[in-house]
Length: 429
Image (cartoon, rainbow, N blue to C red; front, top):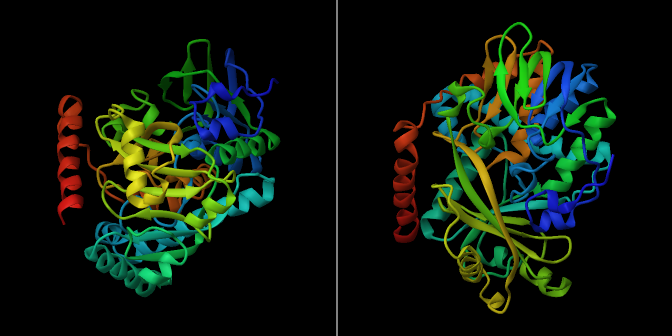
């Protein structure tokens, strides 16, 4: 195997700072395994690792490179819960099941920590995450959330008032924070590459540069590429926003959304730590939110621009810099060295969409921008179902999901219009 060329991934601070990793061969000819997996991101690798550790033979087929998609270029925040508020999940499935789903989401955060330790993954893990309030109504929302988490989910989080927050975060923008010491942040590409190494060590075979063209269902499902095919007793679809047409009944349940992150020039340790003294990750609770954290080499990594049309916004570096200086006016002299983006998959209700098609094709999608912890959990739960323990997957399958309205022609314009309203709400109320 040859050492990975960083330019093989989308240019980002992550790809430039990633640890060396082996390249995997292209799929050629026919291969068989107990389980075949589409997608070498966090979901697919998590499922593959769990299954290999249980003694199953596994082949993972990846269109580009390990971690090429959202798994390797996201904001790096590892947070409990899912893409929608837990009270919305409770309204859909009832309080008892909602509590179980929430507890499993906390397991997802713990699983990231456990895998880093078990497999010696150098992913720059840092403890701590804060959801911050910009407006008085945000304070009310966060305190209501705090009470709900404590009373209904047994998850106690401290409230920081403005002075307590300012002692850790040198920004005049925020009025308070809900702080979680158990959540955190990491280098997502290094974590994904580390999972791939662990999976290969457990016996998983990975094929890169092998886009899947079709899925043939049946007693032994088959994934076909231009140069080969893989067949197994079970199939896992883990391509999320980057897959279309393989299982058409899944396509209309999710929408690809562009999201963007920038890395500043190095700030130096003293200046960087002056911004975020406890090294936590931070996110506000606007619909069009900002989120940020410090890197291991003392940059500010700042995300906060989404495109619901999937087209990159005009003057993206300038827009990102304007958002950054609203948070940190003291960084007016600082520029972004790199800005990058990619597609995430959102479901209509922002809840996870995990389940099975027939008896032997499994899927996990709809992470809705909240996937670093949830993807690992999804992989574990899909692997459990393949091994005959489907209780947890069946629980997630009880979450109802509808197609995006408008069909293929109108669903993107309708979503763009809806998001414009939410952004206006952020600005005016």
